[in-house]
Length: 171
Image (tube, rainbow, N blue to C red; front, top):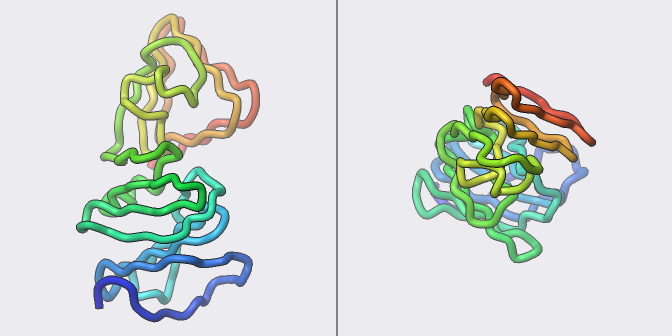
C-alpha cells in the first residue's frame, strides 16, 4: 500500500512522531519532534535515523515521486530531498527548498564562515555527502559542528575551528 497507512511504533518512546509516508510496502518515512526523520526499508521492522541538521518539529512528509520528498516543518519551513540518495547521503538540508543531489564538490568561492552560502561555489552550505575543497588563500571559519565526506585544504588555504568540530565521514 503506497501513501499513508497504519503502523506501530517500536521506537523508544522519547519522540513524538507526527507524519508517515510509505513509497512502497517496504520503504517508508516518519517525521517527528526535534528534527526526527526515520526511514524503514523492511516494512517497518527496523527504522534508521536520518540526520536533518535541524531541531525543528517535522510535522508531515509527502512525496511527488520516487525522487522528490517534502517535509513540512513547525516554523513554516519546507525541506525537500531525494530519498534515492539517502543510502550514501543521509541528510536533508537546513536551508529552505534545497534539493540534495549526489555528492557535490563544494569549492570555497571566498574566505568566510562555513555556514554562509556565499562562501561556497556549490549553491549550498556543504552537506554530509559533499566533498569540500578550500582553495588557495581562502580562510574558512567553523563556529559549530559540521560533517562532510571529505576536506581538501589546498596550498595556503586555511580552516579555522572556533567552536564545534568537523566530522569527516568518508562514505
